[in-house]
Image (cartoon, rainbow, N blue to C red; front, side, top):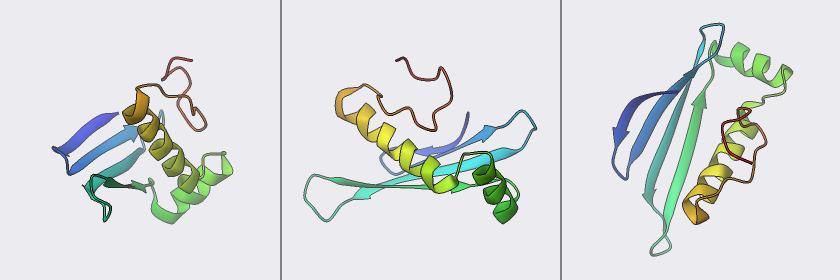
Length: 97
């Protein structure tokens, strides 16, 4: 993972590079939610090769929508109690069991 942009309390952009050299770009944005004291988090994944890349990821068992949901769930766990328990779609060995 390589951080490409960070704005405190607003935005994180990063990219991951596969062994083939193709990069997947991620953007996580934060903004106040309508409910007082809460934050709305949005994550967008830009797959390499556009639509073709999304289809390819789905065919190898890494559908982009599931990747985004899993990332957001892990972020919520990490921010909540500091432990990541949801390991679906996580890189093997990235989070301690």
